[in-house]
Length: 88
Image (cartoon, rainbow, N blue to C red; front, side):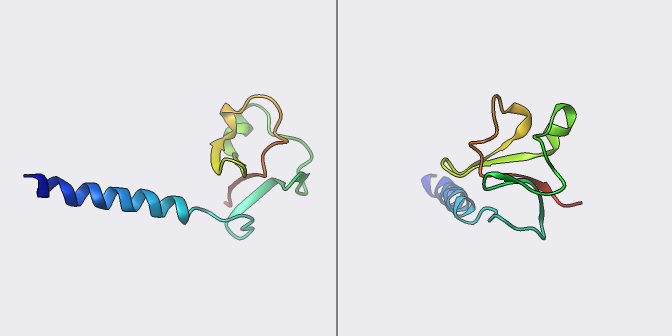
């Protein structure tokens, strides 16, 4: 009975570990459109997103390695390394 659960748990752990190692790499201008890149706005953008527009962007924190939806971000965006969205 233990063997029946061993394989799926091991496979799940392996997938979780490899997804953390092989996440998106930045900057990838072919795949993503950038609003903010390493401390500077990317043309044609001049300000951080507001309102509904903010929900379309993702914020990447280089220190923690987390990608967050910008809707839930409070305060300034200066501590993020990249603000990006999928290219249309």
